[in-house]
Length: 293
Image (cartoon, rainbow, N blue to C red):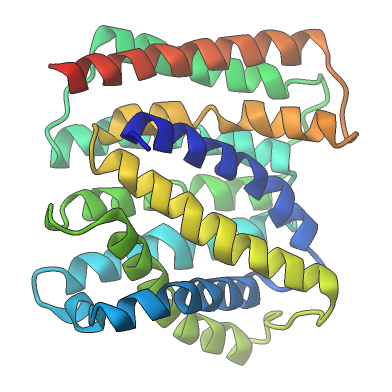
């Protein structure tokens, strides 16, 4: 699978997570979902890591701090906060606010990775943002300040994590980087769970088939294959370009909602979908040209 194909595959996986996160509300607490999901992902990678004797590599001084940053800011903190935010806001509001990540990406990638966006990339990024907002527009947006502010204060964390991942040694495979992310995410989640428990926050789960399915989805589909394809992409292309493409995911989230019978096609949604796809395709073409050079 090429880096571009991996990027689009990761996009489709990401498109499902807001719906799954909202589905998890009332079934399993955010921190319990994080703990169980990352544990499932670790168990998935354990046979390979053990066979290849790779466990010790995570704790070498050249990667330990970077993996700690990836785990904390890539999964533990942001996913816990976003799942909490979904108790107070909607997946629609959350998806719109997540588009601010592309701004953080352009700024942080320019500062720390010395990436220079092209005019075509900026135009494509703008089309993605406009398309997503238009896709989700249905005339009845409501401000849910508590949840929305949590999301706004969270999205920058993903970019910090991605930059740390880009700084990891080039010889590390996407699979190893993904395994490191879930391992350190699990380590960070343990004190987070204890802290929330001591302060009386919800830290439990409903032991049912529904909660089991949610944990399996986030553990295997999102934390393993979603991250695996994402790291295959960003370790082989500019982070700001990959971010611009993947942030068209709310348009696909809307499509999933339509096919699931939760929503209907409308003018704004269809026009927005076309804009978002056009922008994502435009940035993809920039990536392909850069790789060709």
